[in-house]
Length: 438
Ligand SMILES: NC(=O)c1ccc[n+]([C@@H]2O[C@H](COP(=O)([O-])OP(=O)(O)OC[C@H]3O[C@@H](n4cnc5c(N)ncnc54)[C@H](OP(=O)(O)O)[C@@H]3O)[C@@H](O)[C@H]2O)c1
Image: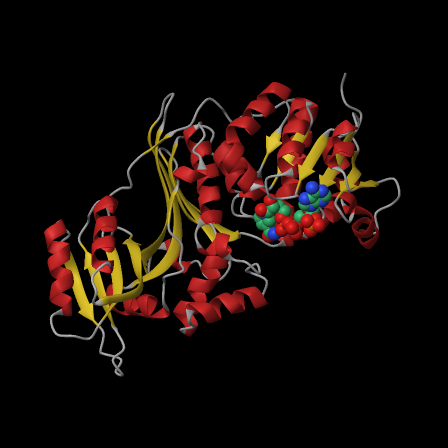
C-alpha cells in the first residue's frame, strides 16, 4: 500500500543531531511538499532527550526517549537517523532498524568501516534504504557523487584530505610556523580538535573514511585494519618549511584508495600517509579545516570535490539530503546507484605503490654522522636524491638531517627507518613523508 506519510526518528542529539533535528522539523512543510506526502519528526532519542527537545522547541507530538529500543519497537517509524557515533548502541540501532525494514541514515564512519559487511547484509535483508553521505567529508557530497553521479562510470581512485583537524594543524604550522603542540592547542581552542585528538592525529579517523571509500569503489568490504596508516604526530614546522623552500611542496595528510583489480576478490591499494604535495597541486591549496577529494574515473577523468568536512551545519545538510533521498526511495523505490552496498567478503590489500620519501632524523653533531646514515641506507639499497644537514643548533643539541630518497617500495623505506633509527647517533622520533609523484 502506498505510504501516506513518513515518520523519522533522530537518534543522538549532539553536535550534528541537534542541527539535523532542528532543520528536519523546521523544514517539514517544505520537505513534505517536495515528497508529496508529509514528512514528520516522530521521535528524538538521546540520554538527554527531554532537555534537548525542550531547547530545540520541539512540540510534545515529537516523542522523546533515552532508549533507542523504543524507536525500534515503534512500527510507525519509517526512517532512523543514527547520530550516536561510536560502535555500541549505534551498531544495534542500525542493524535493528535495517533488519526491520526501516530506512537508515548514518554519519558513522567508524561503524560503517568496521561492520560494512553486516550493515550491507542487513540493508539487503530488510530491503530498506541506507544512506551515509555525512560519514565521509561532512558537507561535501562525495558519497552521492560516487554512487549516483558517477554510476555510469568506473572510479579507479580517490585521493583525499579527509580529516579537517590535521589539515588545520598542518596549515597552521605551514603559515604561522606554529609548533605541532601549539597548533594542536589552537585547533582544540577553536573546536576543530577534540580534547583527545589522537584518532585524528594518528590517522585512524582518515583510515575509517578510506575504508568506506575503498569499499564503495571496489564493491566489497575493505576493513579499516588493512588501511596502512601513519599520522602527523612526528611532523615538525621545520619539515614543512624546508619542503616548501627546497622541494616546492607542502605536507598534507592524504588518504588513498586505488582499485587495481575488480572481481569477486578485488585488489585495492589503501593508505593514509603524510605526503609532500607539490605547491601547485589542488590538494596543496586546501587550507584550514577543509576537506578535498580528487576522484579519477575512467570516462569522467579527474574530478575535484572541496568543502567543509565537519561542523553542525555542513554535516546536518548532508544528513538531511540523505533523509530526503531515503524518503524518496521508501515512496518510489531505489534509483540508479541507491542499491544497498554489496557484502560478500573483503577485498585484498595491495602493496603500496613505490614512492620517493622524505626522511628526517635528529643526529648527534659529530664528524661522520651523515656518512654513517648514508652507509646504512646504501647497504639496504635505498638510493638518495637529496641530502641536507641543518646548521648545528649549538649547545650540543642534535642536528636535523633531511634526506629525500629515489622511488622505493614502502617495505624498503620501513626497513631503512628502523635501521637508521637504531643508530646510536640518532635521537628522538623521526619523520617519514611520502612524496607525491611529479
Ligand atoms: N561533529 C561533526 O562535525 C561530524 C562530522 C561528520 C560526521 N560526524 C559523525 O556524526 C556522528 C555524531 O557526531 P556528533 O559530533 O554529533 O557526536 P556527539 O556530539 O557526541 O553526539 C552524540 C549524541 O548521542 C548521544 N548518545 C550516544 N550514545 C547514546 C545512547 N546509547 N543512547 C542515547 N544517547 C546516546 C550522546 O550522549 P552523551 O553525550 O551523553 O554520550 C550525544 O548527545 C558520529 O558518528 C560522527 O562521527 C560528525
